[in-house]
Image 1 (cartoon, rainbow, N blue to C red):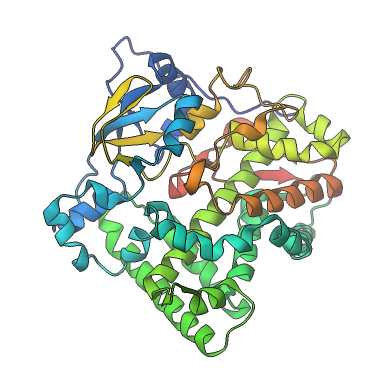
Image 2 (tube, one colour):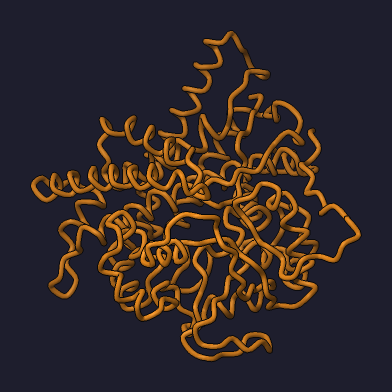
Length: 452
């Protein structure tokens, strides 16, 4: 059994810590020490001040002000560190998800001139409040019910088996044999599984998926922090949006049994969804939905193979698979803190801290999930933890992740099949060689080599 990856402590320099602490989830060095940092912040209080890099709202503001590019500025705002207060904030309707709340009147006036490439991102479920959020979510929610997930089970199982068969064939072609044949779990399985599933659900034609995969790799390989790459990223978004417009028109003329056809023909109080609203929904489901599952699958395998005694427990008792999933989400959830800060619509008090109207607040999901006041021995990974499902990895309230049931289904079938087919599964190499990825600002491993 391989030792678990270390979460190293920040180097002691003898100098006082910077105040506020910079929480930079797009920095691998920060991710490597983040849980120690969160523990220090929880000790300071349930609501503290922290510094964050440029987010989507800041990028929009710089675009509206005609000052794009330059070094990303740091912005100080409130950060919720503990579990109870995180739940309270997630459920408080006085905290808005709409970035427009933070814009100045001149910037609001400029919204009509926002680049077309940004509009689907600006009007996504993640950045809307009721009633628009309610209207859009209601249109796709039926696709993620328990009944809908059971209907998907055979198709997801087929994809799981196909991907593992392909990994075996690739290993055989290299002259490798079990149990020491190798695959990169992320590249061979964790990434293509959710992409294939969500493509099926949306109705992306099979003939377009190789192109779509290549397009995604280009976007993922670009650096959102590098202003010199902004032009390339905008061009990639234009390319994808052009593709979607063509697909929307196809489904208007020839609808099929898929989510894009549903959206194209959906009506709410007599109004149809606009192309921007449909693009926004597809982008959220495709990108935000699939990357969280990629990291759930990757983080779960690494935790299973590196945390003492866990692999043996699950292998001997497959009923613990669901515990493995929930504990992975708690212990190494894909999202460290909410991507979109909440904005106070009115003066309010949270855990004795006054938050004035217009001030911004980020919610530390990963920090809350390691709160010792909520979870006993929170830094221990335990697939038998009785309350692991109380984690906040998928959020809570009206913005709870709509794709959570799908992610759980994919993980259940993936882990169950993996352990059944490969009882001698091991990491290929040292756990210390694993590196956190900063793709999409989420927590996951860049590469996960396995012997299977």
